[in-house]
Length: 215
Length: 215
Image (tube, rainbow over all chains, first blue to last red; front, side, top):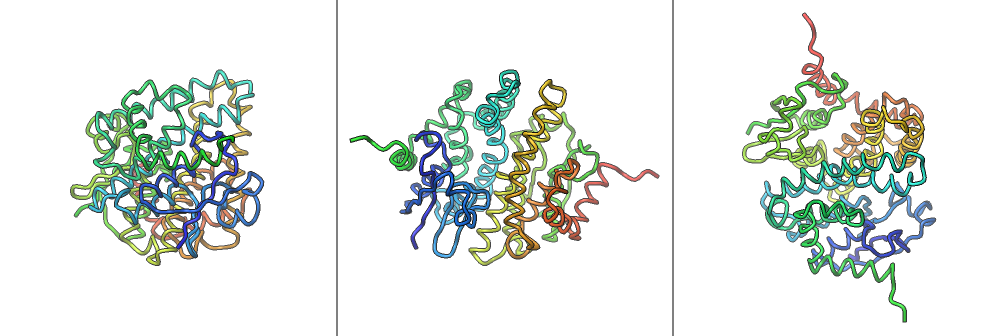
C-alpha cells in the first residue's frame, strides 16, 4: 500500500529541515520505505479535509490504506515498530528505545519549543529580552542532564534507534541558537545523526520542496 | 516479577493527584497489576542512584526485574502494550490509540506546562501578569481543537485507551485554572476518566502518601 505523508507547501524555515515532516521522512528512509508527499498550505491545514486527519491542523500526517495517523512521534513509532533498523527486537532494549522517543518529545522538546515561542510569538513583547535568559537556562539544564547520560557513547542506548532519530531532530532545532555548541558531546551526537545516509536523503527531499534549485 | 515505581516522598500538589506517578498508578490499576512504590525526596531525586534510572532526576520510574524505565509515556505504553484494557489489539485502532498518547504529551501538555512555568517559575517576574493571557490563549487554542475532535464521543477513539488515560491526566492539570470549564465536553470527558474505578484507586493510593489521614 502506498504511504502518503503531508508536509508544508512552503516550510517556515525555508528548507533547514526543522519542520516535522523531516523526522518522518528520515524514519521512512531508515526503514527503506518509499513514500509520497502531499503538500499543504497554511490555509489548507486549517480546512476540514486536513483537520479530519490532523485535529490540530498541522503536518505531518501519515496515510496508508485505511489508516490515517497524525503526531510525529506516533508516526515514527508506527514505522519503527515494523522495521528493526529503528527499534531493537529484544524486549528490554525495545522498551528503552521507546523511552528515548518519549524523552525526546516530552522532556527535551518542551523547553526547546519555549524558545521558539519566546522568539517568534513573543519576540516583540516588552519582556522578550529580559525573559530570554530564563528560557535558555531551562534548555541548558535539560541538555546538561542529557549530556551526562550520553557520556561518550555513540547513541543513547546501544545501536541507533527511533529514540536517537527523534532526539537528534529535537536538538537540531537548537543549532541556530548556538546553545548546542556549549555541549560538545551533544553537538557531535547530532552531527552523527546528520551524517547518516537516510538523514541526508530526508533532508535533500525536504530541501527540494522548500528551496528548489533555480535554473 | 515485582513492579516497583517511584513517586514523590511529598508531592508538590499536596495530594491532588497531579504528579506523574498517578498516571502510572492508573495504568497499573486498569491492567490489574500489583505494584510497589519507592518514595523519593527532592534531594534524593538528584543523587546518582536515582539519576542512574532517571537521567532527568524526576519521578516516576518503573523497575521490573532487569528492566528500568523512565518517562511516564513510555512506562504507560509498556504497561498498555501488555494489556488489552489499555490498547486495542486491532492494528489500526492500536496505532490510533498510540497517536493519542503522543498527542496528549507532545501537543496538549506543552502549553499546559507553560502555564505552570508562568505561575511557579516566573510568577514573581515583572511580566507575569501581562504575559498570562497569551499563555491561556495558547491553551484555549489547543483545547478548542481537541473539543472539536472529541465532539460528543465518550472517548477519543472508540473504547477507553491509554490515549484517554494520558489525555485526561494532562487536562486534569488545568482544573484549578478554571479554563476547563470553558469547554464543557472536555470537562465531562475528564469527569468520565476520574469516575473510573481504576483512577479512583490510583488517586487514593497517591493521596495516602501525600495527605495521610490523621488519627
